Image 1 (cartoon, rainbow, N blue to C red):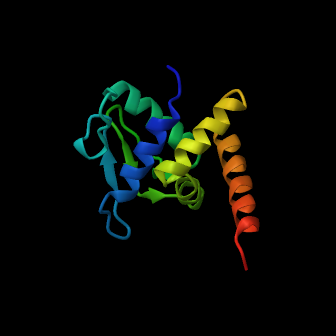
Image 2: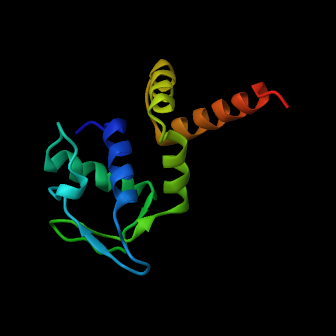
Length: 126
């Protein structure tokens, strides 16, 4: 299965929005309505949740069943990554730049977003 960065972004936005109390754990299943993304099936969502977990963007408590994971929260790296691509316009520019570089990786997206942020801060009048 191919990795879809748009789906990863959407899943992170949905995970961040879940109402989890401090210390709480939610079992996330690939077919859960709370994380459903139009145009993607449960297998695609399951694969991408696994990619997000393996990238260290979420804390899943290590609890995993054949039907889901025990989700607690986004990690600091997950929040940083999501904050850097949250804005739809920024995400579109990020995707365009990453595609021009020959492909997507999480590290490439993070590095490109940092460079764009630095460039923007230099352009702002003081």
